[in-house]
Length: 114
Length: 114
Image (cartoon, rainbow over all chains, first blue to last red; front, side, top):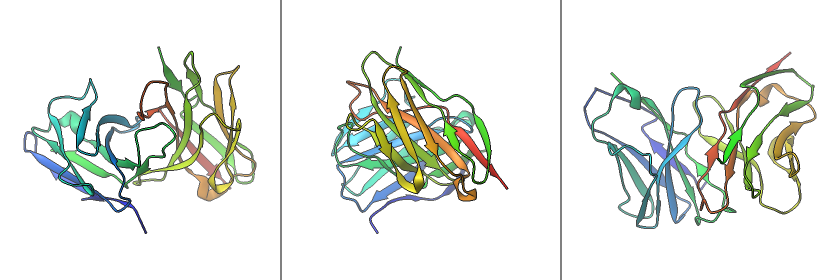
């Protein structure tokens, strides 16, 4: 089945230690998104890639970076995680960036910062 | 300012009873509207979406939602709740000019009791 895969499902890191979260997709979609969902809060868009074009949300902290080496993979890098970065990180994909296009979500990676 | 509001962070219903989850938006132009469901420790799954076609939208698992422009609402309903419906439900919007950026409400946790 075509899908969005996130690894690992759970990630523990130390305060200030760089961490990378991974997302892959078999849908061959052009757009990949990263959302942050803190406990009991709504998901919040951090950034997205349309093909190789990176689009950062204005309020995304500089501590968060992303890479998309090819169509299938997208990475979220947190350069110096703080305690406030503990959250569920959701990857999503869509064919295009038009509003009619459905976004398909992966199962998420829950990040714990010690 | 453009926003989306879900009334009731927790809703409890009896199995077999009507489910009604409320969502209102604030925008001068009707946005695209979505309902997503999130089961524990999983990603988001699209239930249904309104993209300016029929105002009554039918989704998966017996859910439907009606877009009411005069009330700026997009409430989610299901005639008869099932235990498997227990989950968190998010209303989301894409505002005009917002590309494909989903703005989520704060979510409603649905509990289904015997």
